Length: 157
Image 1 (cartoon, rainbow, N blue to C red):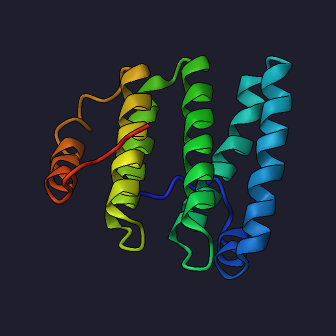
Image 2: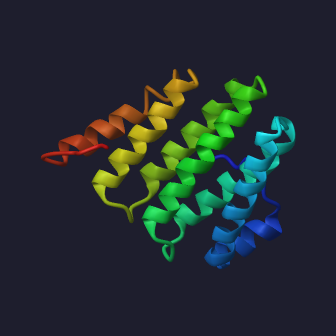
Image 3: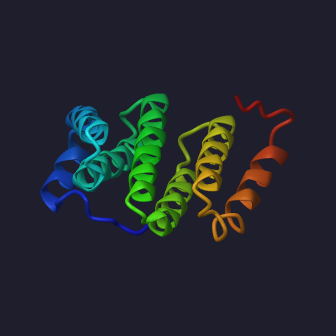
């Protein structure tokens, strides 16, 4: 997974060791992002939602954070980040975030198969909505198909 470097090394290490602080940071940076977006300041909002996304990735990888909470923040921040990049005319940059998120989900062995299927589906839907999926389509559905074959029934809401 490539690193996008929205967080400095100090905060990245701190959040890895302190998931409660990481969750607080996700909340705070997302609120600031929303306030800036609501006032039309897309460029100024990018570092905030970028930090929320990177922090959410750390939460998702943490064994001490509920996967439902971490998944919610991962999807929320990815959606906000790609929306911001698209509004700034940089939708071409979304692809790497979608690919990194799919890889993060794929490599996580602590979530249930049906949760992985739901997350893959959500990320793929977002990527299709921003029309940046062309490279992701070749990798993610194969993993998704494997998940479906391992389950008798996969319910995606």
